[in-house]
Image 1 (cartoon, rainbow, N blue to C red):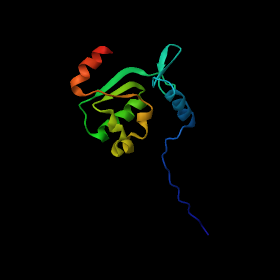
Image 2 (cartoon, rainbow, N blue to C red):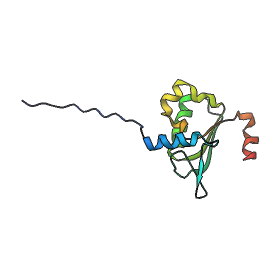
Image 3 (cartoon, rainbow, N blue to C red):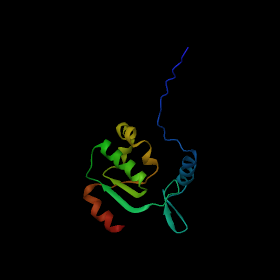
Image 4 (tube, rainbow, N blue to C red):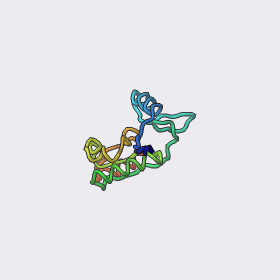
Length: 119
């Protein structure tokens, strides 16, 4: 008799080394660290000197997508109007833990210019 096996592929984002590095970095004040004078993210990848400002974006799914994009490109930081959006279920479903790997700052649109000038 011929048996046909059904195979289902499930995409998971599990990386124990990455999780260990994140845990080590969470014990520090800064979400990024310097290795050989270069700023690194939680997984040790050199960060791009790019801060993505999304203070005018208000939809959680759009911000979650930006967080994932920032994570993939190892951006230095993501700026949103209110960092509390990362606690929303719809953000978490799309972000797929990206908020744990990239610093997210909450800066209201009215304060963004001053915040950027201080950087």
